[in-house]
Structures are given as C-alpha cells and as structure tokens.
Amino acid sequence: MPGRSLIVHRDLEEHLEPLLPRLRAVGLGGALAVLALILLVCVMLPTNVGRVAVSTTIAIATVSAFLTGSGFRLRDARRRHGNMLRSRKDPEADDLRAQLPPRETIARRFRISSYGIAIGLVGLLAAAVIGYLTSDTAAAGAWYLVAALLGVAFTALAFVAATYTRPID
Image (cartoon, rainbow, N blue to C red; front, top):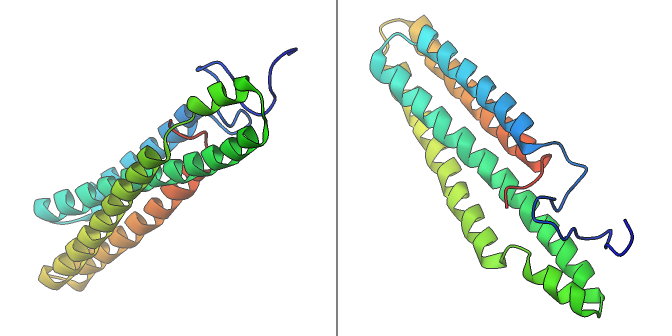
C-alpha cells in the first residue's frame, strides 16, 4: 500500500483495529447466547412476573456491558492512534486525527452504558432476592438465585467479548 499510513486507515470502511474479530460475529454469538439464557430463565422460573423481571434485567445488563466494553476499546484505540498522529508533523496527520471520534462522545457513551450495567445488575439482584423470598418452595427460590448468577456471568462475558472486538465507532 504505497502512500498510505500503516498507523491509521484513511477509508471510513476500514477500522482502527484491523486485526480484531468482526463485531457482527461476536455480537451475533453473544446475542444468541443471551437469548438462550433468557429462554432457559423462562423455562426454569415458576412465575410470569419473575420471568419478565429476570429476563429484562439480564438483557439490560448484558447489552450495556457489551456497549461499555466497546467504548473501552474505542477509548484505547483513539488514545493510541491520536498519540501516534500527534507525533507526526505532516498535514495528513491532522486530517486523519480529525476523523477520530471525539473524546467527549466516547466518555458519554462509556458513562451511560456503565449506568445501564449498574441498573441491570441491581435490578437482577432485587428480582432474585424478591423471587427467592416469595417462592413457595426452596427449589423454586434457588432457581431465582441461579438465574441471577448466570445473568451476572453473562454480563461479565459480554463486557470481555466487546473488549476483544473492533470498537463501535
């Protein structure tokens, strides 16, 4: 590729991180895994209110965690490429630096999705505790706790999966 920088790509179709896995593949796999978990929750929990509460909080927490992980990756990529471009002194570097996403946008996206994780996990904990305390049998109450633990695990996996993909920019 003569005349092109190896640090930052000029085409908008190309990404800041060309060697990372595609977001669609990881996102689709994660979405299918979360849907499988939600179906499992719908099968194992005894009440409709519990199913809706736990499923909704799992969906909120995992989507927010995926967006937070992507924002984390985007922030690091922007910082790394911005520093490399600042060290160059040619006018092309200024044009390429102008194409990077603004820091304020990345920080706002990161903060909002972090709030979504907190809301989702607190809601998941509340749904699990209320479901456990109001269950008729100990086995039914235990399923609420299992569903909450699986929701927390999937939330953590969604964050990690997003940090290993190309960022959403």
